Amino acid sequence: LARAERAGGETIVADKGYAGRAFALAASELQAKIVRPARRDEPQVGPRLSRIRQRVESIFWTCKDLLTLERHGARTLGNLRVRIAQRFLALAAAIALNHQLGRPSRALVAYVA
Picture (cartoon, rainbow, N blue to C red):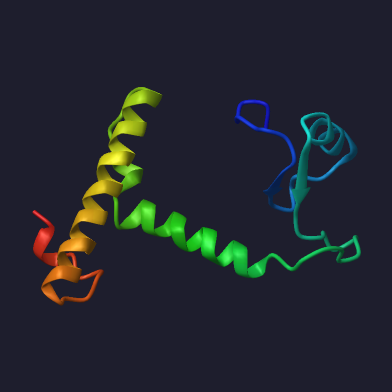
């Protein structure tokens, strides 16, 4: 939390593991609100996060599989950022081209070498 830029008042969606008094105190000192699913021994308070979690996991799967981010080959954080940006831009360009050509947006076979 301390490494991310914040303006104050952000809501952060977290996993069940982000629980505990020390973590809650650290988050409140950084003016961040943590929203997480309840553990089995806790009552459910707040929104159900299953839909958000499914969407996030779907995005992660797309990044890891379709964009081959598990085999990025970068050696520094700066290079990793560049490679991720390149792959997202290439995906956006392929989807835009498919849209112009009347093809399904995720039909990427023609663009794979």
